[in-house]
Image (cartoon, rainbow, N blue to C red; front, side, top):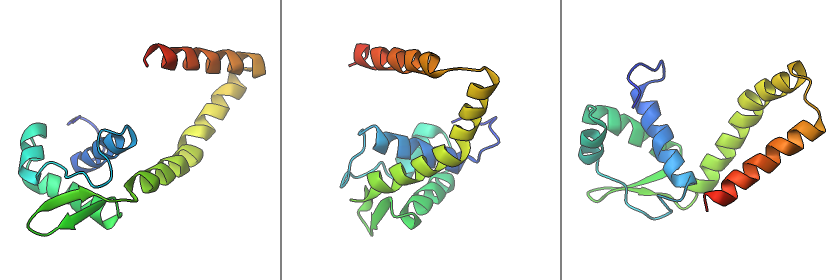
Length: 125
């Protein structure tokens, strides 16, 4: 957790858990760490983690089985992916396109960038 960030700690926890789902570290049906265990891991108040879990439950990403715990929902991956895609198109892409314009990058420059990214991904596999 970045305690100096302007983003709330509970939202950073939400982002962390969503990232784990997108990366496949948490999958549909998996039980997630208890509120107390995750609070201890992140060194935050358990109420902060509970707020994150409640947010994820209300978003349909987590299911709460009373007395058992929280589980990753069957539709979690698709919900997160759709949300991240919308955020990318509304927030990240316009900034990227502005940089492309300001730096006067052309299709060759961008093709080289994509090639570099692909090569780095293949090296990490």
